Image (cartoon, rainbow, N blue to C red; front, side, top):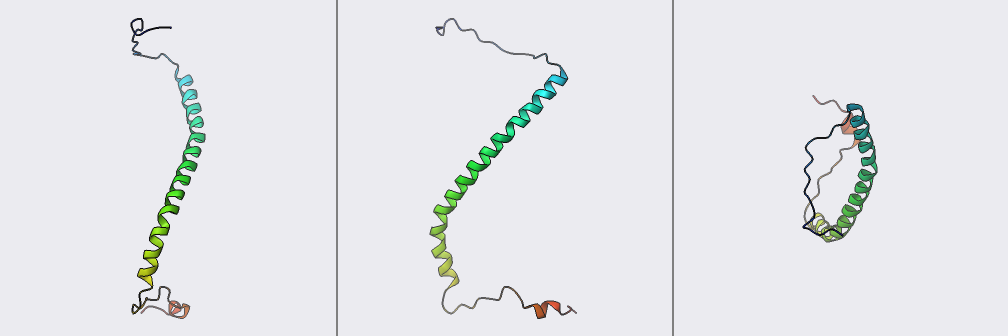
Length: 89
């Protein structure tokens, strides 16, 4: 077992690698990143789904109260089809 007094620091200043080997290495690196991206996407979707499931019940009552106040008239959101076929002059 080595102790701290016998260790030597090493600094890499250059790597001699043919261009074609470097391209192949980088393509393999990109292909290996695809499963990691899928795993991170699933973890992110689960996280935001759980977070949304925890926060949504708090806001549901507030939204329901603001929409159903007595005396407030709600505007129609979709006009009937008869008005949509008339030309706008």
